[in-house]
Image (cartoon, rainbow, N blue to C red):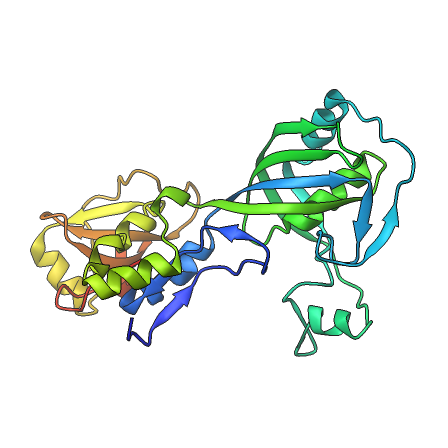
Length: 288
């Protein structure tokens, strides 16, 4: 594209496909707000063997030789145990760092580091299909979760709950926040749009992808003061979507003409608005 400023909003493992929002140009300033959005995945969990990477690409470390006799009801009961806030131990084959080195680099050298468990949230998990006709049965699931959730580890933990080794044998990220697969393009399609001069058609507006942030509309005189860094007191803080009990919250700022002007911090006690990420209308518009 000939653009230097492009930022991704969350890596995918090499064998995983699906939604990966890329922020282009000035939109890179909003990567942090998109990264925090919940993710949705469709995964295939295979029970009966395990690997050192927790997915099908690794070296097999355990195999069940006998016939696996797990019912659909047992699977559904096990899945129910993983909704809400859960603890996960990050896998060694991950990009987390230890003393400046990525864990997967250490794992490839045969080094294992003790990892602390951490909290992640599984908002929803549902069984899509259970194929028990195979030697190693497949469990197809859909998972909505917080950022930082390892679906590979979730699959292993579900298998452990069933009393069996398990791996993740397939994964597609189907959504990041409100960005779904049907809004995505392949690299080849993006290249074709560049050739045809239609690249602007595929971008999503910045404010559309951060629609989870509450919005505030002000008259132009207050907008002008806010855009040039002045602290302003707003006349009314009855804003839909504000969190109860939080004194400082981020909001999207709009003029009465529905023009998006950026992210601001609102102190709900003093009703003072402070600039955080200002977007001037004159800036080039390359978005997400």
